Length: 462
Image (cartoon, rainbow, N blue to C red; front, top):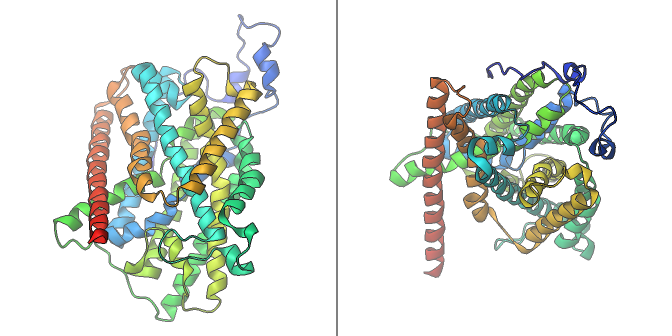
Protein backbone atom coordinates (compact mmCIF):
# COMPACT_ATOMS: atom_id res chain seq x y z
CA UNK A 1 0.00 0.00 0.00
CA UNK A 2 1.33 3.45 -0.82
CA UNK A 3 0.49 6.95 0.19
CA UNK A 4 1.69 9.69 -2.13
CA UNK A 5 4.35 12.00 -0.81
CA UNK A 6 2.85 14.65 1.41
CA UNK A 7 5.04 17.72 1.57
CA UNK A 8 4.92 19.65 4.84
CA UNK A 9 4.07 23.32 4.60
CA UNK A 10 7.30 24.72 5.99
CA UNK A 11 9.26 22.19 7.95
CA UNK A 12 10.11 18.52 7.61
CA UNK A 13 9.61 17.56 11.21
CA UNK A 14 8.57 18.78 14.61
CA UNK A 15 12.24 18.89 15.58
CA UNK A 16 13.05 21.34 12.79
CA UNK A 17 10.02 23.34 13.71
CA UNK A 18 11.40 24.05 17.17
CA UNK A 19 14.50 25.84 15.91
CA UNK A 20 12.59 28.33 13.75
CA UNK A 21 12.60 31.73 15.48
CA UNK A 22 9.55 33.94 15.21
CA UNK A 23 10.70 37.56 15.61
CA UNK A 24 7.16 38.63 16.54
CA UNK A 25 6.78 36.07 19.29
CA UNK A 26 6.57 37.41 22.88
CA UNK A 27 9.60 36.99 25.09
CA UNK A 28 7.48 35.60 27.91
CA UNK A 29 5.23 32.55 27.47
CA UNK A 30 1.53 33.13 27.03
CA UNK A 31 -1.00 32.28 29.71
CA UNK A 32 -2.29 29.31 27.67
CA UNK A 33 1.18 27.82 27.45
CA UNK A 34 1.69 28.17 31.19
CA UNK A 35 -1.62 26.51 31.93
CA UNK A 36 -1.13 23.76 29.39
CA UNK A 37 1.90 22.26 31.05
CA UNK A 38 2.95 20.33 27.94
CA UNK A 39 6.40 21.93 27.38
CA UNK A 40 8.22 18.74 28.32
CA UNK A 41 6.31 16.63 25.77
CA UNK A 42 8.79 15.99 22.93
CA UNK A 43 6.38 14.27 20.58
CA UNK A 44 4.88 10.82 20.22
CA UNK A 45 6.98 7.87 19.08
CA UNK A 46 6.40 5.96 15.85
CA UNK A 47 5.50 2.78 17.74
CA UNK A 48 3.04 4.56 20.02
CA UNK A 49 1.36 6.21 17.02
CA UNK A 50 1.02 2.85 15.25
CA UNK A 51 -0.53 1.26 18.34
CA UNK A 52 -2.99 4.14 18.80
CA UNK A 53 -4.09 4.14 15.16
CA UNK A 54 -4.30 0.32 15.07
CA UNK A 55 -6.40 0.33 18.23
CA UNK A 56 -8.72 2.90 16.64
CA UNK A 57 -9.18 0.60 13.65
CA UNK A 58 -9.56 -2.76 15.41
CA UNK A 59 -12.72 -2.57 17.51
CA UNK A 60 -16.00 -4.43 17.52
CA UNK A 61 -15.93 -4.68 13.71
CA UNK A 62 -13.55 -7.61 13.90
CA UNK A 63 -16.34 -9.79 15.31
CA UNK A 64 -18.60 -9.25 12.29
CA UNK A 65 -15.96 -10.00 9.64
CA UNK A 66 -16.31 -13.82 9.68
CA UNK A 67 -20.03 -13.34 8.98
CA UNK A 68 -19.14 -11.29 5.89
CA UNK A 69 -17.29 -14.36 4.62
CA UNK A 70 -20.55 -16.28 4.92
CA UNK A 71 -22.18 -13.76 2.57
CA UNK A 72 -19.30 -13.18 0.13
CA UNK A 73 -17.44 -16.47 0.31
CA UNK A 74 -13.83 -16.78 1.45
CA UNK A 75 -12.15 -15.71 -1.79
CA UNK A 76 -14.27 -12.64 -2.52
CA UNK A 77 -14.42 -11.73 1.18
CA UNK A 78 -10.64 -11.61 1.67
CA UNK A 79 -10.27 -9.69 -1.61
CA UNK A 80 -12.79 -7.12 -0.30
CA UNK A 81 -10.88 -6.73 2.98
CA UNK A 82 -7.70 -5.94 1.02
CA UNK A 83 -9.57 -3.62 -1.37
CA UNK A 84 -11.14 -1.66 1.50
CA UNK A 85 -7.70 -1.28 3.11
CA UNK A 86 -6.34 0.34 -0.07
CA UNK A 87 -9.44 2.54 -0.35
CA UNK A 88 -9.08 3.60 3.29
CA UNK A 89 -5.44 4.49 2.71
CA UNK A 90 -6.38 6.58 -0.30
CA UNK A 91 -9.04 8.48 1.67
CA UNK A 92 -6.62 9.19 4.53
CA UNK A 93 -4.01 10.41 2.00
CA UNK A 94 -6.60 12.84 0.66
CA UNK A 95 -7.30 14.17 4.14
CA UNK A 96 -3.62 14.67 4.96
CA UNK A 97 -2.69 16.26 1.62
CA UNK A 98 -5.56 18.77 1.70
CA UNK A 99 -4.87 19.46 5.39
CA UNK A 100 -1.29 20.42 4.50
CA UNK A 101 -2.50 22.67 1.69
CA UNK A 102 -5.08 24.40 3.89
CA UNK A 103 -2.85 24.36 7.02
CA UNK A 104 -5.63 22.55 8.91
CA UNK A 105 -4.64 20.67 12.06
CA UNK A 106 -7.88 18.70 12.46
CA UNK A 107 -10.51 16.88 10.41
CA UNK A 108 -13.10 19.42 11.54
CA UNK A 109 -10.84 22.30 10.53
CA UNK A 110 -10.41 20.72 7.10
CA UNK A 111 -14.18 20.36 6.66
CA UNK A 112 -14.57 23.97 7.79
CA UNK A 113 -11.95 25.08 5.27
CA UNK A 114 -13.76 23.26 2.45
CA UNK A 115 -17.43 23.80 3.34
CA UNK A 116 -17.56 26.44 6.06
CA UNK A 117 -18.97 26.12 9.56
CA UNK A 118 -21.86 23.89 8.48
CA UNK A 119 -19.46 21.39 6.96
CA UNK A 120 -17.51 21.31 10.19
CA UNK A 121 -20.72 20.85 12.20
CA UNK A 122 -21.82 18.00 9.92
CA UNK A 123 -18.55 16.17 10.58
CA UNK A 124 -18.80 16.73 14.33
CA UNK A 125 -22.35 15.35 14.40
CA UNK A 126 -21.30 12.34 12.30
CA UNK A 127 -18.39 11.55 14.64
CA UNK A 128 -20.72 11.85 17.65
CA UNK A 129 -23.34 9.53 16.12
CA UNK A 130 -20.73 7.00 15.09
CA UNK A 131 -18.63 7.01 18.26
CA UNK A 132 -21.49 7.06 20.76
CA UNK A 133 -23.08 4.14 18.93
CA UNK A 134 -19.76 2.26 18.83
CA UNK A 135 -19.03 2.84 22.52
CA UNK A 136 -22.50 1.72 23.60
CA UNK A 137 -22.02 -1.44 21.52
CA UNK A 138 -18.64 -1.98 23.21
CA UNK A 139 -20.20 -1.70 26.65
CA UNK A 140 -23.11 -3.98 25.72
CA UNK A 141 -20.67 -6.64 24.46
CA UNK A 142 -18.58 -6.36 27.63
CA UNK A 143 -21.75 -6.82 29.69
CA UNK A 144 -22.79 -9.82 27.59
CA UNK A 145 -19.36 -11.44 27.94
CA UNK A 146 -18.96 -10.93 31.69
CA UNK A 147 -22.57 -11.13 32.93
CA UNK A 148 -24.46 -12.93 30.18
CA UNK A 149 -27.43 -11.87 28.14
CA UNK A 150 -31.10 -12.78 27.77
CA UNK A 151 -31.86 -10.48 24.83
CA UNK A 152 -33.03 -13.55 22.90
CA UNK A 153 -35.25 -16.38 24.12
CA UNK A 154 -32.16 -18.35 25.15
CA UNK A 155 -30.04 -17.16 28.08
CA UNK A 156 -26.31 -17.07 27.37
CA UNK A 157 -24.34 -17.27 30.61
CA UNK A 158 -21.52 -14.79 31.11
CA UNK A 159 -17.98 -15.68 32.17
CA UNK A 160 -18.48 -14.51 35.77
CA UNK A 161 -21.81 -16.32 36.02
CA UNK A 162 -20.18 -19.52 34.75
CA UNK A 163 -17.31 -19.27 37.23
CA UNK A 164 -19.15 -18.18 40.39
CA UNK A 165 -22.85 -18.72 39.77
CA UNK A 166 -25.57 -16.08 39.84
CA UNK A 167 -24.96 -13.30 42.41
CA UNK A 168 -25.93 -9.65 42.73
CA UNK A 169 -22.32 -8.53 42.28
CA UNK A 170 -21.93 -10.19 38.87
CA UNK A 171 -25.18 -8.80 37.53
CA UNK A 172 -24.98 -6.75 34.36
CA UNK A 173 -25.58 -3.27 35.81
CA UNK A 174 -23.14 -3.69 38.72
CA UNK A 175 -20.39 -5.18 36.52
CA UNK A 176 -20.71 -2.34 33.99
CA UNK A 177 -20.71 0.22 36.82
CA UNK A 178 -17.48 -1.20 38.27
CA UNK A 179 -15.92 -1.38 34.79
CA UNK A 180 -16.90 2.22 34.10
CA UNK A 181 -15.50 3.55 37.39
CA UNK A 182 -12.38 1.37 37.51
CA UNK A 183 -11.36 1.23 33.82
CA UNK A 184 -13.19 3.66 31.52
CA UNK A 185 -13.18 6.76 33.73
CA UNK A 186 -9.44 6.77 34.61
CA UNK A 187 -8.40 6.10 30.99
CA UNK A 188 -10.78 8.80 29.72
CA UNK A 189 -9.05 11.43 31.86
CA UNK A 190 -5.85 11.55 29.78
CA UNK A 191 -5.56 14.79 27.81
CA UNK A 192 -3.12 13.53 25.18
CA UNK A 193 -3.84 10.53 22.98
CA UNK A 194 -0.16 9.53 23.14
CA UNK A 195 -0.65 8.84 26.87
CA UNK A 196 -2.76 5.85 25.80
CA UNK A 197 -0.02 4.24 23.70
CA UNK A 198 0.76 1.60 26.35
CA UNK A 199 -2.87 0.53 26.77
CA UNK A 200 -3.23 0.60 22.97
CA UNK A 201 -0.29 -1.79 22.65
CA UNK A 202 -1.87 -4.06 25.25
CA UNK A 203 -5.19 -3.88 23.38
CA UNK A 204 -3.52 -4.94 20.13
CA UNK A 205 -1.84 -7.77 22.08
CA UNK A 206 -5.21 -9.00 23.36
CA UNK A 207 -6.62 -8.91 19.82
CA UNK A 208 -3.65 -10.99 18.66
CA UNK A 209 -4.21 -13.39 21.59
CA UNK A 210 -7.84 -13.80 20.50
CA UNK A 211 -6.59 -14.47 16.96
CA UNK A 212 -3.98 -17.03 18.08
CA UNK A 213 -6.52 -18.98 20.14
CA UNK A 214 -9.01 -19.01 17.25
CA UNK A 215 -6.33 -20.16 14.81
CA UNK A 216 -5.23 -22.89 17.24
CA UNK A 217 -8.77 -24.21 17.63
CA UNK A 218 -9.32 -24.20 13.86
CA UNK A 219 -6.03 -26.04 13.18
CA UNK A 220 -6.80 -28.72 15.81
CA UNK A 221 -10.27 -29.32 14.35
CA UNK A 222 -8.86 -29.30 10.82
CA UNK A 223 -6.28 -31.96 11.69
CA UNK A 224 -8.92 -34.10 13.41
CA UNK A 225 -11.19 -33.82 10.37
CA UNK A 226 -13.89 -31.91 12.25
CA UNK A 227 -14.26 -29.16 9.63
CA UNK A 228 -14.37 -28.98 5.85
CA UNK A 229 -13.20 -26.37 3.34
CA UNK A 230 -15.65 -23.43 3.26
CA UNK A 231 -17.11 -21.75 0.20
CA UNK A 232 -14.79 -19.50 -1.83
CA UNK A 233 -17.53 -17.65 -3.76
CA UNK A 234 -20.89 -16.13 -2.75
CA UNK A 235 -24.02 -18.23 -2.98
CA UNK A 236 -26.24 -16.15 -5.28
CA UNK A 237 -29.48 -17.92 -6.13
CA UNK A 238 -31.92 -15.05 -6.70
CA UNK A 239 -32.18 -11.26 -6.76
CA UNK A 240 -32.57 -11.04 -2.98
CA UNK A 241 -29.33 -12.91 -2.35
CA UNK A 242 -27.59 -10.63 -4.87
CA UNK A 243 -28.70 -7.45 -3.08
CA UNK A 244 -27.63 -8.99 0.21
CA UNK A 245 -24.01 -8.89 -0.98
CA UNK A 246 -24.02 -5.10 -0.59
CA UNK A 247 -25.01 -5.30 3.10
CA UNK A 248 -21.43 -6.22 4.01
CA UNK A 249 -20.01 -2.91 2.71
CA UNK A 250 -20.99 -0.85 5.82
CA UNK A 251 -19.43 -3.57 8.01
CA UNK A 252 -16.17 -3.47 6.05
CA UNK A 253 -16.14 0.34 6.10
CA UNK A 254 -16.78 0.44 9.86
CA UNK A 255 -13.94 -2.03 10.38
CA UNK A 256 -11.45 0.49 8.95
CA UNK A 257 -12.75 3.78 10.35
CA UNK A 258 -9.91 5.69 12.02
CA UNK A 259 -10.01 9.01 10.16
CA UNK A 260 -11.17 11.07 13.16
CA UNK A 261 -7.94 10.23 15.05
CA UNK A 262 -5.42 10.64 12.21
CA UNK A 263 -4.91 14.39 12.68
CA UNK A 264 -4.54 14.08 16.45
CA UNK A 265 -1.90 11.37 16.06
CA UNK A 266 -0.17 13.39 13.33
CA UNK A 267 -0.10 16.52 15.49
CA UNK A 268 1.52 14.65 18.39
CA UNK A 269 4.17 12.87 16.29
CA UNK A 270 7.74 14.01 16.94
CA UNK A 271 8.39 13.82 13.19
CA UNK A 272 5.29 14.66 11.14
CA UNK A 273 6.73 13.05 8.00
CA UNK A 274 6.29 9.66 9.72
CA UNK A 275 2.49 9.81 9.49
CA UNK A 276 2.64 8.16 6.04
CA UNK A 277 4.50 5.15 7.46
CA UNK A 278 2.26 5.10 10.55
CA UNK A 279 -0.86 4.79 8.39
CA UNK A 280 0.71 2.14 6.14
CA UNK A 281 1.98 0.05 9.07
CA UNK A 282 -1.31 0.27 10.96
CA UNK A 283 -3.40 -0.69 7.94
CA UNK A 284 -1.06 -3.56 7.08
CA UNK A 285 -1.20 -4.86 10.67
CA UNK A 286 -4.97 -4.58 10.95
CA UNK A 287 -5.58 -6.05 7.49
CA UNK A 288 -3.46 -9.08 8.43
CA UNK A 289 -5.47 -9.55 11.63
CA UNK A 290 -8.76 -9.12 9.73
CA UNK A 291 -7.81 -11.63 7.03
CA UNK A 292 -6.70 -14.26 9.54
CA UNK A 293 -9.70 -13.91 11.86
CA UNK A 294 -12.07 -13.95 8.87
CA UNK A 295 -10.41 -17.00 7.35
CA UNK A 296 -10.10 -19.10 10.49
CA UNK A 297 -13.38 -17.92 12.02
CA UNK A 298 -15.33 -18.90 8.90
CA UNK A 299 -13.24 -22.08 8.52
CA UNK A 300 -14.14 -23.03 12.10
CA UNK A 301 -17.90 -22.40 11.98
CA UNK A 302 -18.72 -22.37 8.24
CA UNK A 303 -22.27 -21.40 7.32
CA UNK A 304 -23.11 -21.60 11.02
CA UNK A 305 -21.09 -18.42 11.64
CA UNK A 306 -23.24 -15.92 13.54
CA UNK A 307 -23.34 -12.15 12.95
CA UNK A 308 -21.24 -11.77 16.11
CA UNK A 309 -18.74 -14.64 15.94
CA UNK A 310 -18.16 -14.31 19.68
CA UNK A 311 -21.56 -15.94 20.18
CA UNK A 312 -20.21 -19.08 18.47
CA UNK A 313 -17.81 -19.52 21.39
CA UNK A 314 -20.71 -20.14 23.77
CA UNK A 315 -21.03 -23.84 22.90
CA UNK A 316 -18.97 -27.01 23.08
CA UNK A 317 -16.28 -26.82 20.40
CA UNK A 318 -15.74 -30.57 20.38
CA UNK A 319 -12.09 -30.41 21.45
CA UNK A 320 -10.28 -30.88 24.79
CA UNK A 321 -10.47 -27.94 27.20
CA UNK A 322 -13.30 -26.45 25.16
CA UNK A 323 -14.76 -24.52 28.11
CA UNK A 324 -11.38 -23.06 29.05
CA UNK A 325 -10.68 -21.95 25.48
CA UNK A 326 -14.15 -20.41 25.16
CA UNK A 327 -13.55 -18.35 28.31
CA UNK A 328 -10.07 -17.32 27.11
CA UNK A 329 -11.49 -16.07 23.81
CA UNK A 330 -14.28 -14.10 25.46
CA UNK A 331 -12.16 -12.61 28.25
CA UNK A 332 -9.37 -11.53 25.87
CA UNK A 333 -11.90 -9.86 23.62
CA UNK A 334 -13.66 -8.10 26.52
CA UNK A 335 -10.27 -6.82 27.71
CA UNK A 336 -9.50 -5.64 24.19
CA UNK A 337 -12.72 -3.61 24.04
CA UNK A 338 -12.08 -2.06 27.46
CA UNK A 339 -8.75 -0.71 26.20
CA UNK A 340 -10.16 0.42 22.84
CA UNK A 341 -12.82 2.47 24.65
CA UNK A 342 -10.64 5.52 25.56
CA UNK A 343 -9.17 5.74 22.04
CA UNK A 344 -12.64 6.06 20.50
CA UNK A 345 -13.82 8.28 23.38
CA UNK A 346 -11.03 10.84 22.83
CA UNK A 347 -12.28 12.24 19.47
CA UNK A 348 -15.89 12.01 20.67
CA UNK A 349 -15.12 14.43 23.52
CA UNK A 350 -13.17 16.80 21.24
CA UNK A 351 -15.96 16.95 18.64
CA UNK A 352 -18.72 17.48 21.21
CA UNK A 353 -16.68 20.31 22.77
CA UNK A 354 -16.11 21.86 19.33
CA UNK A 355 -19.82 21.65 18.58
CA UNK A 356 -20.97 23.16 21.88
CA UNK A 357 -18.12 25.62 22.51
CA UNK A 358 -16.66 26.56 19.12
CA UNK A 359 -15.09 29.82 20.36
CA UNK A 360 -13.83 28.65 23.76
CA UNK A 361 -10.17 28.13 24.61
CA UNK A 362 -8.70 24.63 24.03
CA UNK A 363 -10.40 21.91 26.04
CA UNK A 364 -7.16 20.72 27.65
CA UNK A 365 -6.75 24.15 29.25
CA UNK A 366 -10.16 24.15 30.93
CA UNK A 367 -10.30 21.42 33.58
CA UNK A 368 -13.93 22.12 34.55
CA UNK A 369 -15.23 21.90 30.99
CA UNK A 370 -13.07 18.84 30.38
CA UNK A 371 -14.48 17.10 33.47
CA UNK A 372 -18.13 17.99 32.78
CA UNK A 373 -18.04 16.81 29.15
CA UNK A 374 -16.24 13.59 30.14
CA UNK A 375 -18.70 12.78 32.93
CA UNK A 376 -21.71 13.63 30.74
CA UNK A 377 -20.59 11.41 27.87
CA UNK A 378 -19.62 8.44 30.04
CA UNK A 379 -22.94 8.67 31.88
CA UNK A 380 -24.86 8.75 28.57
CA UNK A 381 -22.98 5.71 27.24
CA UNK A 382 -23.46 3.82 30.53
CA UNK A 383 -27.22 4.48 30.55
CA UNK A 384 -27.51 3.54 26.88
CA UNK A 385 -25.75 0.21 27.46
CA UNK A 386 -28.02 -0.63 30.41
CA UNK A 387 -31.40 0.45 29.08
CA UNK A 388 -31.02 -0.61 25.45
CA UNK A 389 -31.04 -4.43 25.42
CA UNK A 390 -29.75 -4.74 21.86
CA UNK A 391 -28.89 -1.89 19.51
CA UNK A 392 -27.48 -3.86 16.58
CA UNK A 393 -30.33 -2.89 14.26
CA UNK A 394 -30.12 0.78 15.24
CA UNK A 395 -26.35 0.64 14.91
CA UNK A 396 -26.66 -0.60 11.32
CA UNK A 397 -28.86 2.36 10.39
CA UNK A 398 -26.97 5.14 12.24
CA UNK A 399 -23.42 4.12 13.07
CA UNK A 400 -22.60 2.45 9.77
CA UNK A 401 -24.04 5.35 7.77
CA UNK A 402 -22.08 7.92 9.81
CA UNK A 403 -18.95 5.79 9.45
CA UNK A 404 -19.28 5.76 5.66
CA UNK A 405 -19.57 9.57 5.68
CA UNK A 406 -16.48 9.96 7.88
CA UNK A 407 -14.41 7.40 5.98
CA UNK A 408 -15.25 8.06 2.34
CA UNK A 409 -17.93 10.62 1.53
CA UNK A 410 -16.36 13.58 3.37
CA UNK A 411 -12.75 12.98 2.16
CA UNK A 412 -14.04 12.53 -1.40
CA UNK A 413 -16.20 15.67 -1.17
CA UNK A 414 -13.18 17.68 0.07
CA UNK A 415 -11.20 16.43 -2.93
CA UNK A 416 -13.93 17.34 -5.42
CA UNK A 417 -14.33 20.75 -3.76
CA UNK A 418 -10.56 21.31 -4.27
CA UNK A 419 -10.34 24.77 -2.72
CA UNK A 420 -6.57 24.91 -3.17
CA UNK A 421 -6.48 23.51 -6.74
CA UNK A 422 -4.20 20.58 -5.91
CA UNK A 423 -6.45 17.66 -6.93
CA UNK A 424 -5.42 15.69 -10.01
CA UNK A 425 -7.77 14.07 -12.50
CA UNK A 426 -7.01 10.72 -10.88
CA UNK A 427 -7.98 12.15 -7.47
CA UNK A 428 -11.33 13.35 -8.76
CA UNK A 429 -12.12 10.04 -10.48
CA UNK A 430 -11.28 8.13 -7.29
CA UNK A 431 -13.32 10.58 -5.17
CA UNK A 432 -16.34 10.17 -7.46
CA UNK A 433 -16.00 6.38 -7.25
CA UNK A 434 -15.86 6.55 -3.42
CA UNK A 435 -19.03 8.60 -3.19
CA UNK A 436 -20.91 6.44 -5.70
CA UNK A 437 -19.88 3.22 -3.95
CA UNK A 438 -20.69 4.58 -0.48
CA UNK A 439 -24.10 6.00 -1.41
CA UNK A 440 -25.25 3.05 -3.53
CA UNK A 441 -24.06 0.29 -1.20
CA UNK A 442 -25.50 1.97 1.89
CA UNK A 443 -28.87 2.63 0.31
CA UNK A 444 -29.04 -1.03 -0.71
CA UNK A 445 -27.83 -2.16 2.74
CA UNK A 446 -30.38 -0.01 4.57
CA UNK A 447 -33.16 -1.24 2.27
CA UNK A 448 -32.11 -4.88 2.74
CA UNK A 449 -31.88 -4.55 6.52
CA UNK A 450 -35.23 -2.75 6.72
CA UNK A 451 -36.88 -5.35 4.49
CA UNK A 452 -35.44 -8.23 6.55
CA UNK A 453 -36.57 -6.56 9.79
CA UNK A 454 -40.07 -5.95 8.38
CA UNK A 455 -40.31 -9.52 7.14
CA UNK A 456 -39.13 -10.85 10.53
CA UNK A 457 -41.76 -8.82 12.41
CA UNK A 458 -44.49 -9.90 9.97
CA UNK A 459 -43.65 -13.60 10.44
CA UNK A 460 -43.81 -13.18 14.23
CA UNK A 461 -47.31 -11.70 14.03
CA UNK A 462 -48.50 -14.60 11.90
